[in-house]
Amino acid sequence: MSQEASQEEDRQEEDRLLLGRAQEGDVSAFEALVGLHQDRVYGLALRMTRSEADAAEITQDTFLSAYQHLKDFRGEAAFGSWVHRIAANHALMRLRHRRVAQAAEAELQAPEFTERGTLADYPVTDWSRDAEEKALDAELGQAIQQAADRLPEGYREVFLLKDVDGLSYEQIAEVTGDSIPAIKSRLHRARLALREAIDLFYNRDNRGA
Image (cartoon, rainbow, N blue to C red; front, top):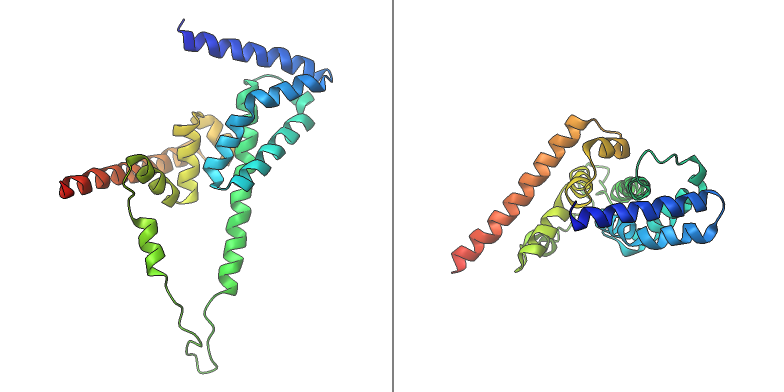
């Protein structure tokens, strides 16, 4: 057994011992579990929402939900995986609420028409901001991050859950409610988009050489 696998086994054993105590009402044991897993939960929430404030709230909500349902957890999966799925669910709900709010705001800001059917005001397009969002940064890592941020939310969610956080297709399906074929299709398209960003980065550097 590799050292990494042995360490992971030790971590899971520690989780099981703390979980058993927490389910019997030991609050300090649950606090220890929070301490062991809060960084990963916060990291997932931050990557999904791109907002430190949202990530902090999601982390708090995740462990509150975990505490409230602690006695229902039967250990079919590792505690870390269970908490991870709770966090992903909270992040997805936050993203969906954000989409609804943005759609409502866009509707309020839609162009107005006069009685004769002409535009009352011509919308002003911020071309400079659009160019900034599409421009590749000097560093490859930032170029990939920018490309990931530009992915449609459904694609970005699947990419983060599978390639960054290592969830299985079955776990992602449980979190998102989507079919595994649909998840695989979105993941494939997300990977192609990121590969294109990497190609653009290197091609640009070659042109400048």
